[in-house]
Length: 109
Ligand SMILES: [Zn+2]
Ligand SMILES: [Zn+2]
Image 1: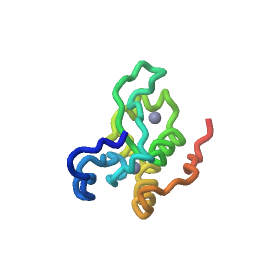
Image 2: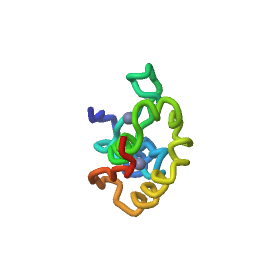
Image 3: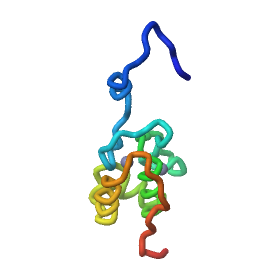
Image 4: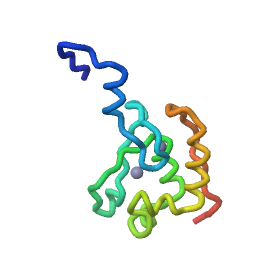
């Protein structure tokens, strides 16, 4: 996938193509990038957002597909959830490549 042109991309140029995670606002390294369906595929959703793998797992640790489809089908709605806010504040203090077990919600269903 490395496309060699006349000149090597500089670090600065590489930064320009990096994506920003809409959840935590940090750069997403390529190996941490995952597509999240804002409305779950199982509910017919097609629109995806690129997130960190850890941010993506966190969403699915907190919300069921039915909740995602009904209540949390936008990043803004997800970010209004207090447990998500706690997570974002925490993950912002970590390196972008940081990976951990997602924190489970206390809610049991
Ligand atoms: Zn997802
Ligand atoms: Zn993120």
